[in-house]
Length: 189
Length: 88
Image (cartoon, chains in turn brown, blue):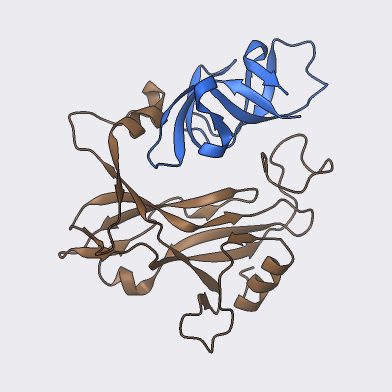
């Protein structure tokens, strides 16, 4: 079941979801309130990763994909004047926010990241596959950003570019054999 | 007690992550992007959570949970050679 904005705030207060920095202000009376009725906005961080063009193919069967991807992409820091994403170009971005979904018996949450309709009208997709943020996740969310429109779209660091939708999980997920043995946080945290 | 697995480490797609390759006991080499706070670059080590600790003393491999999802397999839990695990 999707959590309302008030339930998201309650879940944050109870530690069932940890979003850092804490989305503020909470009240809809402020124009910069990051909460919609059933979602909370996430913001674009300043670092982009831009794939290099080249005479190569991504082949998962060859292994060491992480190394291959890293070697064939370059870092880019979004300048204060913005980064213009040209039509049909693809870059990776990340959220400013770190999201943690602890495994808590009977209270575990999962989430989905979605784009925002205003950007969608410009042809911008910010997360076009694998939208699920699984229970137990801890980290920033990687954004798969592509401009499907016919004009450039300017990206700014800190812009509200995506939204997080939280859902309750029915039953307790098992992530590994030792979970729930005195621990309530994701692996390694 | 924290556990570390021997691995190879290179810069990742973002400044605060690393591309890591780990030898496993069952599926060969796997790779993932690990946050910078999970690796010791100069020592070629990555932090892992050791699973079933105490129940794997007879095997030549150790079941660990990786800090991120690898590309080559569907699970974050994987067996690695015992000699590649260091605890402190």
